[in-house]
Length: 330
Image (cartoon, rainbow, N blue to C red; front, side, top):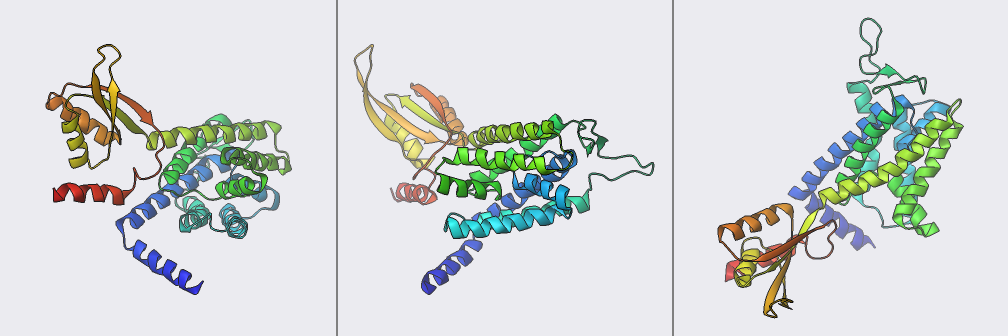
Protein backbone atom coordinates (compact mmCIF):
# COMPACT_ATOMS: atom_id res chain seq x y z
CA UNK A 1 0.00 0.00 0.00
CA UNK A 2 2.83 2.39 0.98
CA UNK A 3 4.73 1.55 -2.21
CA UNK A 4 1.63 2.27 -4.32
CA UNK A 5 1.18 5.67 -2.68
CA UNK A 6 4.86 6.48 -3.14
CA UNK A 7 4.76 5.46 -6.81
CA UNK A 8 1.60 7.53 -7.35
CA UNK A 9 3.32 10.58 -5.88
CA UNK A 10 6.37 10.03 -8.09
CA UNK A 11 4.16 9.69 -11.19
CA UNK A 12 2.26 12.85 -10.25
CA UNK A 13 5.47 14.85 -9.77
CA UNK A 14 6.66 13.71 -13.22
CA UNK A 15 3.28 14.64 -14.69
CA UNK A 16 3.57 18.14 -13.21
CA UNK A 17 6.68 18.67 -15.31
CA UNK A 18 4.87 18.08 -18.60
CA UNK A 19 3.33 20.63 -20.98
CA UNK A 20 0.06 18.67 -20.89
CA UNK A 21 -0.31 19.25 -17.14
CA UNK A 22 0.11 23.02 -17.34
CA UNK A 23 -2.07 23.33 -20.43
CA UNK A 24 -4.91 21.43 -18.76
CA UNK A 25 -4.44 23.40 -15.54
CA UNK A 26 -4.93 26.66 -17.45
CA UNK A 27 -7.97 25.24 -19.28
CA UNK A 28 -9.55 24.05 -16.03
CA UNK A 29 -8.93 27.39 -14.31
CA UNK A 30 -10.36 29.42 -17.20
CA UNK A 31 -13.30 27.04 -17.54
CA UNK A 32 -14.14 27.33 -13.85
CA UNK A 33 -13.75 31.12 -14.04
CA UNK A 34 -16.43 31.13 -16.75
CA UNK A 35 -18.64 28.88 -14.61
CA UNK A 36 -18.20 31.16 -11.60
CA UNK A 37 -19.07 34.21 -13.72
CA UNK A 38 -22.21 32.49 -14.99
CA UNK A 39 -23.25 31.71 -11.42
CA UNK A 40 -22.50 35.15 -10.03
CA UNK A 41 -23.88 37.33 -12.83
CA UNK A 42 -26.88 35.31 -14.03
CA UNK A 43 -27.86 32.72 -11.43
CA UNK A 44 -27.58 34.69 -8.20
CA UNK A 45 -29.20 38.04 -9.17
CA UNK A 46 -32.30 36.48 -10.77
CA UNK A 47 -32.67 33.87 -7.97
CA UNK A 48 -32.92 31.09 -10.54
CA UNK A 49 -32.46 27.67 -8.95
CA UNK A 50 -30.92 25.49 -11.66
CA UNK A 51 -30.05 21.89 -10.84
CA UNK A 52 -26.49 22.59 -9.73
CA UNK A 53 -24.59 22.82 -6.46
CA UNK A 54 -24.56 26.57 -7.01
CA UNK A 55 -28.35 26.49 -7.14
CA UNK A 56 -28.49 24.57 -3.85
CA UNK A 57 -26.09 27.11 -2.33
CA UNK A 58 -28.41 29.95 -3.35
CA UNK A 59 -31.25 28.19 -1.50
CA UNK A 60 -29.11 27.88 1.64
CA UNK A 61 -28.10 31.55 1.45
CA UNK A 62 -31.78 32.56 1.10
CA UNK A 63 -32.77 30.48 4.15
CA UNK A 64 -29.80 30.81 6.51
CA UNK A 65 -27.86 33.78 5.11
CA UNK A 66 -24.09 33.75 4.72
CA UNK A 67 -21.62 33.77 1.84
CA UNK A 68 -22.43 32.01 -1.43
CA UNK A 69 -18.84 31.03 -2.21
CA UNK A 70 -18.42 29.49 1.24
CA UNK A 71 -21.51 27.30 0.79
CA UNK A 72 -20.31 26.15 -2.64
CA UNK A 73 -16.89 25.20 -1.28
CA UNK A 74 -18.25 23.37 1.79
CA UNK A 75 -20.82 21.38 -0.21
CA UNK A 76 -18.19 20.38 -2.78
CA UNK A 77 -15.83 19.23 -0.01
CA UNK A 78 -18.60 17.09 1.49
CA UNK A 79 -19.42 15.60 -1.92
CA UNK A 80 -15.77 14.85 -2.65
CA UNK A 81 -15.43 13.02 0.69
CA UNK A 82 -18.61 11.04 -0.04
CA UNK A 83 -17.32 10.26 -3.53
CA UNK A 84 -14.06 8.80 -2.25
CA UNK A 85 -15.88 6.85 0.48
CA UNK A 86 -18.79 5.58 -1.63
CA UNK A 87 -17.33 5.41 -5.14
CA UNK A 88 -13.66 5.04 -4.19
CA UNK A 89 -11.38 5.71 -7.21
CA UNK A 90 -13.92 7.43 -9.48
CA UNK A 91 -12.46 10.86 -9.07
CA UNK A 92 -8.95 12.21 -9.48
CA UNK A 93 -7.04 15.37 -8.86
CA UNK A 94 -8.78 17.24 -11.69
CA UNK A 95 -12.22 16.94 -10.06
CA UNK A 96 -10.81 17.91 -6.67
CA UNK A 97 -9.19 21.01 -8.18
CA UNK A 98 -12.20 22.23 -10.16
CA UNK A 99 -14.64 21.56 -7.32
CA UNK A 100 -12.62 23.50 -4.78
CA UNK A 101 -11.87 26.60 -6.86
CA UNK A 102 -15.48 27.36 -7.87
CA UNK A 103 -16.33 29.01 -4.54
CA UNK A 104 -13.21 31.22 -4.41
CA UNK A 105 -13.65 32.21 -8.07
CA UNK A 106 -17.26 33.23 -7.36
CA UNK A 107 -15.97 35.47 -4.58
CA UNK A 108 -13.28 36.72 -6.98
CA UNK A 109 -15.91 38.03 -9.42
CA UNK A 110 -17.82 39.61 -6.52
CA UNK A 111 -14.64 41.45 -5.55
CA UNK A 112 -13.39 42.43 -9.01
CA UNK A 113 -16.68 43.39 -10.68
CA UNK A 114 -19.70 43.27 -8.33
CA UNK A 115 -22.96 42.98 -10.25
CA UNK A 116 -24.86 45.44 -8.02
CA UNK A 117 -22.31 48.25 -8.27
CA UNK A 118 -24.12 51.59 -8.31
CA UNK A 119 -23.18 54.84 -9.92
CA UNK A 120 -23.10 58.22 -8.19
CA UNK A 121 -26.84 58.66 -8.75
CA UNK A 122 -27.58 55.42 -6.90
CA UNK A 123 -28.66 53.61 -10.09
CA UNK A 124 -27.53 50.13 -11.09
CA UNK A 125 -24.63 50.06 -13.55
CA UNK A 126 -24.85 46.37 -14.43
CA UNK A 127 -28.29 45.33 -13.20
CA UNK A 128 -31.93 46.22 -13.80
CA UNK A 129 -34.98 45.58 -11.66
CA UNK A 130 -36.70 42.29 -12.50
CA UNK A 131 -40.50 42.75 -12.26
CA UNK A 132 -41.11 38.99 -12.21
CA UNK A 133 -38.84 37.95 -9.34
CA UNK A 134 -38.72 41.25 -7.50
CA UNK A 135 -34.94 41.06 -7.60
CA UNK A 136 -32.31 42.68 -9.76
CA UNK A 137 -30.72 40.94 -12.71
CA UNK A 138 -28.37 41.90 -15.49
CA UNK A 139 -30.76 40.92 -18.30
CA UNK A 140 -33.95 41.98 -16.52
CA UNK A 141 -35.79 38.80 -17.50
CA UNK A 142 -35.45 35.31 -15.97
CA UNK A 143 -35.57 33.54 -19.35
CA UNK A 144 -32.71 35.63 -20.70
CA UNK A 145 -30.76 35.05 -17.49
CA UNK A 146 -31.45 31.34 -17.88
CA UNK A 147 -30.24 31.29 -21.50
CA UNK A 148 -27.02 33.17 -20.68
CA UNK A 149 -26.29 30.95 -17.68
CA UNK A 150 -26.94 27.68 -19.50
CA UNK A 151 -24.82 28.67 -22.52
CA UNK A 152 -21.83 29.67 -20.37
CA UNK A 153 -22.12 26.70 -18.03
CA UNK A 154 -22.62 24.18 -20.84
CA UNK A 155 -19.63 25.51 -22.78
CA UNK A 156 -17.48 25.25 -19.66
CA UNK A 157 -18.69 21.72 -18.90
CA UNK A 158 -18.06 20.56 -22.46
CA UNK A 159 -14.55 22.02 -22.32
CA UNK A 160 -13.91 20.19 -19.06
CA UNK A 161 -15.19 16.88 -20.39
CA UNK A 162 -12.90 17.23 -23.43
CA UNK A 163 -9.85 17.03 -21.13
CA UNK A 164 -11.35 14.36 -18.88
CA UNK A 165 -12.28 16.78 -16.10
CA UNK A 166 -15.55 18.10 -14.70
CA UNK A 167 -16.95 21.07 -12.82
CA UNK A 168 -17.50 18.87 -9.75
CA UNK A 169 -20.65 19.38 -7.72
CA UNK A 170 -23.60 17.91 -9.59
CA UNK A 171 -21.34 15.52 -11.51
CA UNK A 172 -20.24 13.97 -8.21
CA UNK A 173 -23.81 13.69 -6.95
CA UNK A 174 -24.92 12.17 -10.24
CA UNK A 175 -22.23 9.48 -10.06
CA UNK A 176 -23.34 8.55 -6.54
CA UNK A 177 -26.95 8.25 -7.77
CA UNK A 178 -25.69 6.23 -10.74
CA UNK A 179 -23.87 3.71 -8.54
CA UNK A 180 -26.52 3.09 -5.90
CA UNK A 181 -29.78 3.55 -7.85
CA UNK A 182 -28.42 1.98 -11.06
CA UNK A 183 -29.64 4.71 -13.41
CA UNK A 184 -27.50 5.60 -16.42
CA UNK A 185 -25.35 8.69 -15.99
CA UNK A 186 -27.61 10.94 -18.09
CA UNK A 187 -30.68 10.06 -16.05
CA UNK A 188 -28.63 10.45 -12.87
CA UNK A 189 -27.71 14.02 -13.80
CA UNK A 190 -31.36 14.83 -14.51
CA UNK A 191 -32.55 13.29 -11.24
CA UNK A 192 -29.90 15.04 -9.14
CA UNK A 193 -30.64 18.35 -10.88
CA UNK A 194 -34.40 18.02 -10.45
CA UNK A 195 -34.03 17.31 -6.71
CA UNK A 196 -31.88 20.42 -6.29
CA UNK A 197 -34.39 22.52 -8.24
CA UNK A 198 -37.19 21.38 -5.93
CA UNK A 199 -35.29 22.65 -2.88
CA UNK A 200 -36.25 26.13 -4.12
CA UNK A 201 -39.70 25.55 -2.59
CA UNK A 202 -38.05 26.13 0.82
CA UNK A 203 -37.12 29.71 -0.09
CA UNK A 204 -39.58 32.11 1.62
CA UNK A 205 -42.00 33.73 -0.86
CA UNK A 206 -40.41 31.92 -3.79
CA UNK A 207 -42.61 31.62 -6.86
CA UNK A 208 -43.61 28.27 -8.33
CA UNK A 209 -42.87 29.80 -11.74
CA UNK A 210 -39.17 30.14 -10.85
CA UNK A 211 -38.93 26.46 -9.89
CA UNK A 212 -40.40 25.45 -13.25
CA UNK A 213 -37.94 27.72 -15.04
CA UNK A 214 -35.15 26.03 -13.08
CA UNK A 215 -36.33 22.54 -14.07
CA UNK A 216 -36.50 23.57 -17.73
CA UNK A 217 -33.03 25.09 -17.43
CA UNK A 218 -31.65 21.85 -15.99
CA UNK A 219 -33.06 19.90 -18.93
CA UNK A 220 -31.76 22.42 -21.49
CA UNK A 221 -28.34 22.33 -19.82
CA UNK A 222 -28.03 18.62 -20.61
CA UNK A 223 -28.99 19.17 -24.24
CA UNK A 224 -26.56 22.05 -24.76
CA UNK A 225 -23.71 20.14 -23.08
CA UNK A 226 -24.27 17.31 -25.55
CA UNK A 227 -24.18 19.80 -28.44
CA UNK A 228 -20.95 21.50 -27.32
CA UNK A 229 -19.32 18.16 -26.53
CA UNK A 230 -20.18 16.81 -29.98
CA UNK A 231 -18.82 20.00 -31.58
CA UNK A 232 -15.52 19.91 -29.67
CA UNK A 233 -14.98 16.21 -30.30
CA UNK A 234 -16.15 16.15 -33.90
CA UNK A 235 -14.02 13.98 -36.20
CA UNK A 236 -14.34 12.77 -39.77
CA UNK A 237 -14.57 9.21 -41.01
CA UNK A 238 -13.27 9.31 -44.59
CA UNK A 239 -13.85 6.43 -46.99
CA UNK A 240 -11.97 6.47 -50.28
CA UNK A 241 -12.21 4.14 -53.28
CA UNK A 242 -9.33 4.72 -55.68
CA UNK A 243 -6.81 2.89 -57.84
CA UNK A 244 -4.18 5.10 -56.20
CA UNK A 245 -5.03 3.73 -52.76
CA UNK A 246 -1.36 2.89 -52.07
CA UNK A 247 -0.28 6.52 -52.54
CA UNK A 248 -3.12 7.63 -50.28
CA UNK A 249 -2.17 5.05 -47.67
CA UNK A 250 1.45 6.23 -47.72
CA UNK A 251 0.33 9.85 -47.28
CA UNK A 252 -1.89 8.97 -44.30
CA UNK A 253 0.82 6.96 -42.58
CA UNK A 254 3.85 8.99 -43.59
CA UNK A 255 2.50 12.55 -43.41
CA UNK A 256 -0.54 12.47 -41.12
CA UNK A 257 0.86 9.67 -38.95
CA UNK A 258 -2.50 7.95 -38.74
CA UNK A 259 -3.48 4.35 -39.22
CA UNK A 260 -6.06 3.25 -41.78
CA UNK A 261 -8.07 0.19 -42.81
CA UNK A 262 -8.26 -1.33 -46.28
CA UNK A 263 -11.19 -3.36 -47.57
CA UNK A 264 -11.66 -5.26 -50.79
CA UNK A 265 -14.92 -4.11 -52.40
CA UNK A 266 -16.80 -4.95 -55.58
CA UNK A 267 -18.51 -2.30 -57.68
CA UNK A 268 -22.23 -2.94 -57.99
CA UNK A 269 -22.40 -1.46 -61.50
CA UNK A 270 -19.08 -2.49 -63.05
CA UNK A 271 -18.48 -5.66 -61.06
CA UNK A 272 -14.81 -4.67 -60.74
CA UNK A 273 -12.93 -5.38 -57.56
CA UNK A 274 -11.24 -2.45 -55.88
CA UNK A 275 -9.83 -1.31 -52.54
CA UNK A 276 -11.69 0.97 -50.16
CA UNK A 277 -9.57 2.85 -47.67
CA UNK A 278 -11.14 4.03 -44.39
CA UNK A 279 -9.47 6.50 -42.02
CA UNK A 280 -10.52 8.55 -39.00
CA UNK A 281 -9.16 12.12 -38.94
CA UNK A 282 -9.55 15.36 -37.03
CA UNK A 283 -10.76 18.46 -38.88
CA UNK A 284 -7.30 19.76 -39.72
CA UNK A 285 -6.10 16.40 -41.04
CA UNK A 286 -9.31 16.01 -43.05
CA UNK A 287 -8.71 19.35 -44.78
CA UNK A 288 -5.08 18.46 -45.49
CA UNK A 289 -5.81 15.13 -47.18
CA UNK A 290 -8.56 16.62 -49.36
CA UNK A 291 -6.24 19.43 -50.47
CA UNK A 292 -3.43 16.93 -51.14
CA UNK A 293 -5.67 14.66 -53.25
CA UNK A 294 -6.79 17.69 -55.24
CA UNK A 295 -3.23 18.91 -55.81
CA UNK A 296 -2.05 15.43 -56.81
CA UNK A 297 -5.06 15.04 -59.13
CA UNK A 298 -5.94 11.67 -57.61
CA UNK A 299 -9.03 10.11 -59.15
CA UNK A 300 -11.15 8.80 -56.27
CA UNK A 301 -14.67 8.30 -54.99
CA UNK A 302 -14.83 9.62 -51.42
CA UNK A 303 -17.47 9.85 -48.71
CA UNK A 304 -17.16 11.46 -45.28
CA UNK A 305 -19.22 11.33 -42.12
CA UNK A 306 -19.08 12.94 -38.68
CA UNK A 307 -17.94 10.99 -35.61
CA UNK A 308 -18.61 12.65 -32.23
CA UNK A 309 -16.82 10.19 -29.94
CA UNK A 310 -13.66 8.12 -30.33
CA UNK A 311 -12.37 5.45 -27.96
CA UNK A 312 -9.31 3.20 -27.85
CA UNK A 313 -6.00 3.72 -29.62
CA UNK A 314 -6.95 6.44 -32.13
CA UNK A 315 -6.26 9.32 -29.75
CA UNK A 316 -3.33 7.55 -28.13
CA UNK A 317 -0.27 9.76 -28.52
CA UNK A 318 2.09 6.81 -28.01
CA UNK A 319 0.59 5.00 -30.99
CA UNK A 320 1.00 8.04 -33.24
CA UNK A 321 4.58 8.42 -32.06
CA UNK A 322 5.24 4.75 -32.84
CA UNK A 323 3.82 5.16 -36.36
CA UNK A 324 6.04 8.21 -36.93
CA UNK A 325 9.14 6.34 -35.70
CA UNK A 326 8.41 3.40 -37.99
CA UNK A 327 8.03 5.73 -40.96
CA UNK A 328 11.28 7.55 -40.11
CA UNK A 329 13.19 4.23 -40.02
CA UNK A 330 12.11 3.31 -43.55
